Structures are given as C-alpha cells and as structure tokens.
Image (cartoon, rainbow, N blue to C red; front, side, top):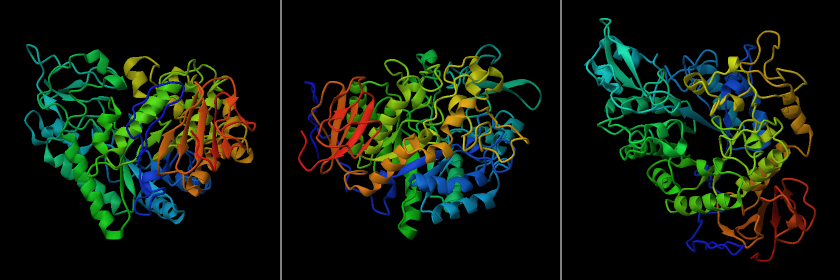
Length: 577
C-alpha cells in the first residue's frame, strides 16, 4: 500500500493510491496487466475487395499485431445484422454476417491467434438486439399481450388514444426513446423502448428467458475457444420497473455524464455479472485459464465503477474518465488517483483507455486549447501544433500506469480524426437522428491505411472493385503501417518499444505507483523499484526529475531536460522523491 504525495504545494489525500498485486500477472490471470488491441473489423483489412473489412483480413493482420507487442484482440461485432449501427444491432448472436465471413473463418482466426500467443475477445451486446431479431419480429406479429413482447419493454401509450409515449425518456443517439408499432390488425398499438435507435429495441432483463438465452450465447462462443467478452452498455441492462418520467430528459440525450438514472446503473444489473462471472469460472476450472469479462461501464464516478469489478462480478471495466480527460495536469492527476484508490479496493486492476470507436482520436482531441475532452475536434487534420506530441506523451503515460490497457486500431499509427467527411457519406445513426455532426463517430472509423500513396492504401485488395466503405483522405499516406514500421521515430515504434519494456521490466504492468514532487506543469510518479515516469503538460522544457538519459521518451528528450508535451521513463537506482 502506498501513500500519495503530490508536488507543487498541492494537497493530496494521504490514503493509499495503488496496490495491484504481483509485478506481472500469472498465466492464469493474464488479463490483470494485458494490453488488448481493439479491432473494428469493418475498417481493419478487406480480403474480398468489397470495401469492407472482414475476419479473413483480421487473420492476415495478426502477425502485425504480434509484432507490435499486444497481448490480444477485441473484435467489434461481426454477427448477422442489418447494420443500422454497424453490428451493434444483432439479429443472430451465434453466427457470422456473410459480409465478414463465416464460422469456419472465425474458428481459423481463433486458432491463428492462439498460435501467436494472442487472446481473442468478442464484443457482445446484451442491452438490445436488432429489430430484425426473431424475438422482436415475433413480438410484432403476436400483438399486444403476446409472450414475446415480455422479452422487450412494450407499454401502452399515454393520451386519449395512447398517442403519446409511455414516458419522456430520450434516446442516447437522439430523439425519443420510444416508437409506436402498428398491430397485426393495422391499428396503432403499443410503444417499445429503444435507448439508442428504433432498430435496436431494448431487451427486458427482468424476464429470465433473456438471461437464459445469453447464457447459451456465451457458451456457444466459449466452446469455440474465445478468451472473453467486451460487454456493450454493461450498466444499462435494467430499467426502473415502473418506467417513470425522467426529471431531466434533455440532459439524458447523448451526454455521458448525465445518463438517465432510471435506465442506467440499476442495482439488479450486478446479479447478471455475478452469473456471467460464475460461468466464466466454470470454464477456467476446466483448464486453468481465465476467461475475461470487460465492461463498457459508463457511470459518473470511479466509485460507482468499482462496484462492477468486485471479485464476483466483471474482471475489468473501461476507465473512461481518462479517455474523457482534457489535457490538464490536475485533471489527469485526479482521475488517475481516484481510479487507483477506488478500483484497488475491489482487488481488480484499472483498465486504461485513450481511444475507441466512439470518440474523437487523441491526436485531434488534444490539439485543441487547452486540450479538449472527447467531443473536441480540431480542424487541423494533422492534429495541429500540439496534438501528435500530446498523444504520444499520453500513450507513454498510459503504458506506465498499473493495470491493463486497450489500444484502438490506428492509435499506434498516430491517426488523426477525419473531420471533413461529407454529409452524404456519414453512416452514424447519431447524425441521421439528430441532423448534427456533434458526437458523430465516423471520423475515427475510417478504414486503416496499410501501404501505398493513394486510397485504398492497401486496405482492400482490389482498388477497382469497390471503394472503402468510408472514404480515406489523401493524407492517410503519411500514416500507413508500411511507412510507420519503416520509420523508427514513428508512433508505431514508440508503442512497440513501450509494450516491449512493459513486458520485460518488473516495475511495469501490475504493481505500485507513488506520486513524486515535481514542477507545476509536470506529473511524475515512480513505479515499483525505481522506474520513474514523468509527463510535461506545459509547452516549456523543465529539468528532468532524475539524472541521466531516459530509457524511453515520447519525443526528443536531451539528457537532464523534459521538453513540453513530452513523457519519458527513467530507471534510477536511488529512491526518487
């Protein structure tokens, strides 16, 4: 257990800030300090020439990921789907959409990944399914009172003739959270709840049939060799049983910090994760290898998140407070300290993340002044003056923190957000439901550049057959994997070296963290026995916190100096203070 000491004359809670067990995880508990690479399958690599990435493309790219140094891959949904939300509207949880391949291709992917020592995580979507799922189609066909309707949230409307929604809830992707159906006899009928889009009806987890179905789904994929699941909307499965009006419906719409408390973080959801954890432990007992559950848990505070990673619930939950932090030393210090304090009490480890498929990429996000949060967009496609340097520094900081980390595809290439996609190519339902580009996610989902000087940059094998499903800008040529691997000063080499050191140094991965006294714009800490990490949030250079050349730095770092927007690691034999 450690005591936090904060420099610059700042006060700090003297309570312990981190205790995460042994320096490196055992083979069984591999997830505690793993670094997982998020593959957005649709945009990773296209093997067929149709302009859409697929599972065969992922198989082709596995050696690249092994060379990078990650421990596993998380695959975005590839299930059969009408693709209203690119796979997060699932029509069949136990198959592969033909656009991505088939089950034989998936089985081969798992074999290839395991041969390379990589874990495979699937994205599972238990809060809602597709409006084309057989359950929902049956609910529509049966009419009011049918047993299939109890699998969802159907309710009579308000008003004289039921013409008003059952309550005032708003959908996360814009608009009302209710849609009215036409009954089999052609008359206007009941309303159903969809917290995202009308094509994604929310499942009713108060009906045990829903839980039974998902147990079968988990077993189906675990029996095929997967190593765990990323759980979509993990805090949202249960709704208030009476479905009352929200006290502030406008704040509930597409605002992470103001999610509808009546549709989010209900106490009953924790039993679902206890049941899923017990199922995973059943498989672990067979062969001694942990199966991982990592949740997308969007809640207000680290304390609330900690409740989801208690020993009998989820193994991990993404710590979004770091992802949403603006470029500010006190914000970073606070969210890191709170995470290490609150999550450590559960015996779990913090799961750090800087990018994902729902947020503006860090290179662009950090380019704003003073360094905006997740919705901030710089019009400078390169990330401007500060974006790339800050993104590199934040990456080195993340890899030095105790716990696990997730890297989103293209992050290792330093890809900026594509901020100028024309309206007529945008596919995000947020744009189509709100008419606004605010929060639209297509810009971080543009297909990866692999090689060459013009689109499709090696993403698809046949440039003449089909264009990539989202257009790639010309400047993607500067960020191709081919170019990054050849340039020893690239983002890719920074990530690769950081990942290598993270595995080879006993101070990194799991372990302890202690804050160091430092200049006002510098955040510095020591890991274990003598590894110092410091990051300069300012623009001016400052003296390095320890003597000697750094072991690794995010940018040019002359001995004895820590430049602005730069992070570095040092090994020191003396005890730094």
